[in-house]
Image (cartoon, rainbow, N blue to C red):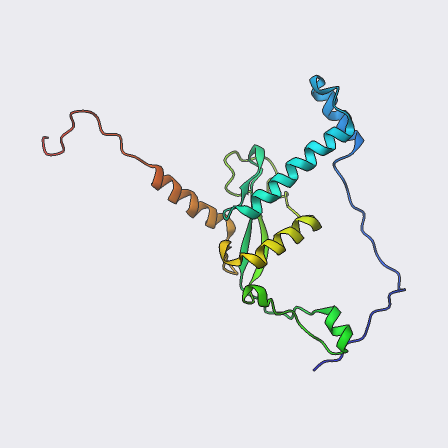
Length: 193
């Protein structure tokens, strides 16, 4: 077993700067673009955006196939992945016992939850779509993790080297084939040529 030392909590830290889109400037731009909502104050605007995001998160967690984002921005879903090959160290237990301890994910049979975002199969391609990304906020990750521990078999299983766009393309083709109904004109008889 490998011993582990506690980190220096007084050491200097690097804190990256975060960027928030939900600001008073965004509210002013929204009012300038849509003057019919000029009576909407900043707090109301913020509640509407946060409520929409909350509903989106709940939809991603509840639906096995995830959610399609508005305006064709892509899809977000939760997937089940096999355990990682590298060690997943549990630092709290390691510092407590003085020996390196690892997470085992006993709640989900050693499977991992991952939040996937793809915009490859969006209906309306948009410029620079390769630049777009998605990072889940801490509350979303915690809610998803809690739901995953309870119902980990519910979510789509994703192979380690599988392309997510291919997964969605296969699903789209199945839906198309399921909804495809042949158009047969009246009086048609296949035995009379």
